[in-house]
Structure formats: C-alpha cells, structure tokens
Picture 1 (cartoon, helix red, strand yellow):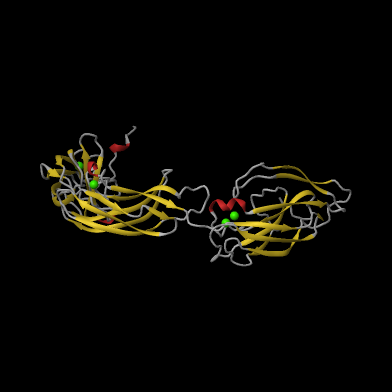
Picture 2 (tube, helix red, strand yellow; picture 1 turned 45 degrees about the vertical axis):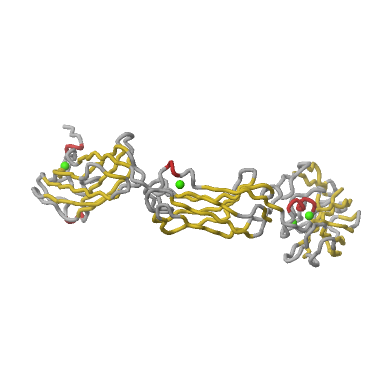
Length: 443
Ligand SMILES: [Ca+2]
Ligand SMILES: [Ca+2]
Ligand SMILES: [Ca+2]
Ligand SMILES: [Ca+2]
C-alpha cells in the first residue's frame, strides 16, 4: 500500500501552539516595541531531543501590509526541551526601522524552519504555529540635514590644494545624533566626477543648530590628454544620510525621502592647467642604410619646448627599429637611455651614440625611432603626442638567408598608447635555410 511521505512520523512528536501574542496596537517609526508570546506544547513528546542539541527558533517578521513585502525579520532561540503540556513565555524588544509609515503587521512563527533533526519535531502539525498582529505605523519626526553656504576658490590650478567650506544645518524638528557622510566632488563640464574628499561626520546636531565644516582638497592633475579635468567645473558638497532606516553600516542618521533634496550645495570653479614641460626629439643622427643584424650608432637630442622645467623626475628615451613611422608600442630590442639632465624650457641635451642592434630578420624600408619619455614619466598633457621622431633607414637583408618581411598590414592611424595589430609574414626567399638559433621579429 502506498503511503504519502508526510504521513510517516519519524518518532513521537510535539505540537507547539501559539496561545498568546501581544504587542502595541500602534507604533511610530524607529520605536522599540515590546512583544510577548506564549507557546504551549499540546503534543505527546518532549522536544527537541536532548541529543539534537538544537534550540527552538521563533521568528517575528515585519510585513508591509500593502505590498506584502518583508521589511525586517528577527529570530529568537529558546534552549531546552518543552515537555508535553508545558509552555514557555517570551518577552522581546524589537526596534522598528526609521522612516516607516502606513499599515504593517507582525507575523510570529514559532518553531520556524524545524525539521526532524533541528528545532522541535512536530511532524505536520505546524498550522497552529503562527499569530499575527496588525501594526499601523506613523512616521516619527526625523532630522533634516541641509548643506548651506558652500565657499571655495573661483579659480584653481590642477594639482594645487584649496580649502572648501560649508555649513550643515539641521532644519528638522528633532536632534540629529549619529553619523553622516560628507563628500566634496569635482564635477567637470563633461559631467564626470572626481571625489576629492570622502569622510564621515560623527556627532550630534541639535534641531536648528548648524556646524561649520572645512576640508582641504587637492584638485587632480590631468594625466591624459583624453580627460577633461581642465576648464569650467563645479565643486559640489554632498552629504549622505541613511536611506533605508535600518542601515548597519554607513550613515546612521535617517532623513525622510522628501528631505534629501537639500543635501547638496555647489560653487563654480574654473580649473586652470598646471604649466608643464613638453619633451620633444630635436634631432636624430643615424645611418640611412645598414644590413640586418648590424649594430648602428644613433645619436639624438631632446629639447624641452614647454613652458615649465622638466625636473624632479627621471625619464627614459627609447631607440628602436620600426616598420612604421608611427609606432604605438616599444618592441623588445629597444635601447633605453636615461635622460641626460633636467631641462629648463628651451634647453636640450645630446644623447648617444647608442648602439642599436638591428634584428637579423629586418629587411627593406624601415625607420629608426627615437621616443622621448618612453615610459611616460613626465606629465606633458597634449605634449605627449609629439614625443617621437622617425628617420628612414634602408635595411639590406642578410645574404645567407633572404628573409623578407611582406604583407605588412597595420592601421594607418593610431592613438599613441593604444595597442594595434600588425600582421606580417617572414619568408625565406633565398637559397639557404635560416641558420640555427632564434631570431626576433620586430615591428
Ligand atoms: Ca504546532
Ligand atoms: Ca536634508
Ligand atoms: Ca610624457
Ligand atoms: Ca612632448
């Protein structure tokens, strides 16, 4: 005879039932409530079994009566066995989240999530394990923090530090006591943003009181020509408060949603560029012809054509052979030379000759490249784009094995610093096979 599984009891079982569930009839948001309930075991067995070592878990859930959504839950554990006919009483305090308003209910479930091996074993007798209390909640008055009177520089130079001042006022009807986050943000004209300061303010602000705040912030240096940190911008001061009403991390002060629109203030700021050096390759001396595998001498001069000195930072200049006059990367085999000296505006230094070994695979028309500040150690802003000079060189292939580079295919334009693909084929069109060992392909 077939039996349905739920009809089979694992062992004699308890039957817990909620006898009473009491709490306040109304509440205000953020309030601590006292809840009391009594649970009796009307079954035949004492549960849980001692060897299970598991407690009974009762849960209380706060449900939004309009949406049915769970707002918050609490769990309470009851240790020890409940003998048949006996009862336990619990009195617990739960704190409502701030910001609640409307109709809610509290749902008690005793012996929640029980099974044959945890909690009290009740077989299928769990329909009498719940009780519900309706709980209309009125919104308690909350603080309202307002950012006022932001002041700071109307003009600033990137990289420099400035003071930004503002006032936080509590215009709410009740005192604020807790933490809120304060941010100072640079918002350039393109709508991007850079956080200049981010910190917590921890303290108390009585209703109607104000706190004067000041932070020293550094305007970011624009490092890439593609950024837009220079030009018209805004400095925004923003405070963030708790939005959920029961935050466990982050700000603890709760504001009503309608009170969060006044949490920012800003001022206009014109960001001026920091004067930069501009390193350029002034001159290159290299042979116009060579044979693959040759060591060729390359001399060059580097000039600072910018308005500020290139000093305080070392940089390196790279020398290499390239199939393209506009290389976008630096190949293995490049020779690096440390900058000879710092350079005041208009000054230049001579480097070399350096010994550049041409790849044995090289053949045909190519370019000797000199790339100053190859490691981008010196910030030049738009001056980054003029750091390369390419000098043509005709490379005679090695006679023994005639390796040719053919089918070179690469983008005709590329942004410096971007990666591009370069395809080529090395073909031995000579009569001898390539001699042993490896050789390096270089683009
Ligand atoms: Ca039950
Ligand atoms: Ca506010
Ligand atoms: Ca640079
Ligand atoms: Ca430059």
